[in-house]
Length: 420
Image (tube, rainbow, N blue to C red; front, side):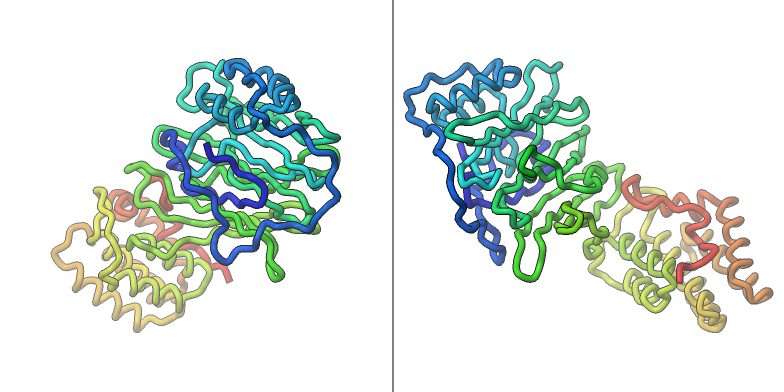
């Protein structure tokens, strides 16, 4: 039994693994380059009873609904390690890789070690991952009091303890926890941060992490130059139907004025699959960053190290044709009809004899023709969108790479405008 004790920072790894089945995590350690969890000394209150090993252990079966039994056990000098071993053998503790059954930390800043543990409700209807609650016992005036119990939720399994450290500079450790929700292939995690406000524990997390499938959580402690932060990295939906996965990270940083961990923007990982570089290029085009868009389209076209994902009707040949079409569009967005014609000619030559490319070649030819006649990209794009709506199987379905990737519409193929 590994118990997180004072002065230890937990960093949680893949919660996908956590949702796949029970296991044991590695010994906790503070990641290299991160600050120590040591805090300035505070005036200690009276010590609580310490384990003597002589107090009778409670039966595990009913403890979720009778946590006062645990309170009495602790105040009688019961040994915490033996208690947790009993809870584990009784199936009450959620045992997942790199998530911890308990934390022994000073959670209210009085210099005494407190206890936090998550318990599963085994009386709930049969479930692979039972619901449960997070319990916190504070050591106060020489005895343990149960000061916090989170409500059990039908939509989430028992909370996971992910980190315990002073993240806000208040000389007390905050608890980073997550409430898993797992489907057949993929888990999600509702992260939260509990802080003692002098009266109760309050959740300082703002926004939601539940849209980040297969999450990994990492915690960075505060430094002289940066506030504490908690990053959640999504590894993508773990299902073939979701298409090629691409990690993205969202970081929550402590905001002293808001007294909350506030979310920042999502940051995508560097593309591994060719289609993801195309998505980056499309986003650059939308933002009117035509120079970056062209560079990304060309890299997607030429970089041999990028992986191809094939799921009929999405094929490498159809993606190649789409990229060449976007190069033509990108030229016209810069009013460069000569480069557009040159790219169209190169597209027609490269696509000769490739059936999957036919629809994209026709679309590019239509785009150039209407633009040459009108010198109006909006009008040319309107014609292209009409073509796409009439040729869904030829130019839209080949761009479908699974439900965890962008799903293209006619508007996406030739946006009415770019964002300045």
